[in-house]
Amino acid sequence: MTTLDVGVGARRVAGRRGAGRVVAVYRAAAYLRFPAGLLALTDGRAPSGPLHLRVATLPQLAPGDAVDIDPTGLHGRQWSVPLDAPTWTGQLPGAEELARYRRRHPPGTGDRLGPVLRSDGVAALAGRIGGRGPGLTPSGDDVLAGVLLVARALHGAAAEPGLAAVAGSVVTTDVAAAFLAWAARGQCIEPAHSWLAAQAGGDRVRAAQALARLDRVGASSGRALRFGLESGLGLEPGLGLEPAAAQLPGSEIHTALVSERPGFDQQYGRSVG
Image (tube, rainbow, N blue to C red; front, side):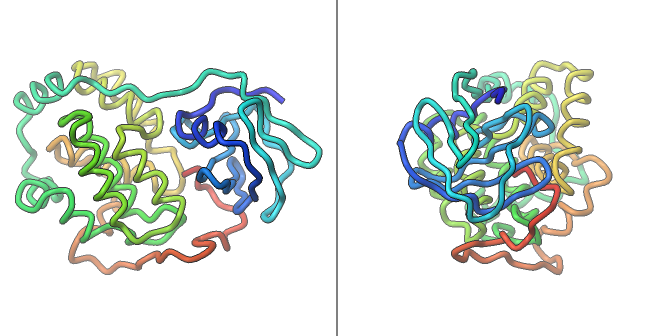
């Protein structure tokens, strides 16, 4: 079985030998729980990401299947995935580069998150939209992940403890919590990193290409993440983001609560985290 790349978080999970279980299976991904944390086993349709172990073809999996992991590979009953592939780590533009970008592009008049960020801060925003919305990764969390990633890029490594505390305060699904924790560390899916770098560098063509990839992620997760990224930079979010906008304060919302197996009743779906 060919391994394409191993996200930095997936590599960390693999660094601790242990037995785990398959907890959810989707068309392009499966989520596996180990003592060291969650891992998303995906095929090549999913973007690179911190929790993603991407392979050319997914093995046959079902919820409840036993799996084992060690630094050499991920092992099922009749299959193995080697980990001899590059470790993927998302790169962030420098804080000064982003600060110059923000000075050149003042907040848009239609920005809905910007006033909340400027007046209340990221922690208050997390309290208002964290864990809200339907799905394995609620749309409110996808928006928040974009904001956290931009905040980490703008303020550097010194901001990580505070951002990690914000991420950890959100009551949500296990999958969303894992992705929020990595966003607070400055790690998200590949199109988000590519878009930030392109925006900071003034490369409009590359930025548009990254947004197109981002918009294709999940049923609405990519668009909600885009909403958070653009709002975090102080831009007026693009059109067609109703699923994300619906999670903002004052909207009618649903809350996804943590449980032993949160959100895992969806056997087949489009989510890849």
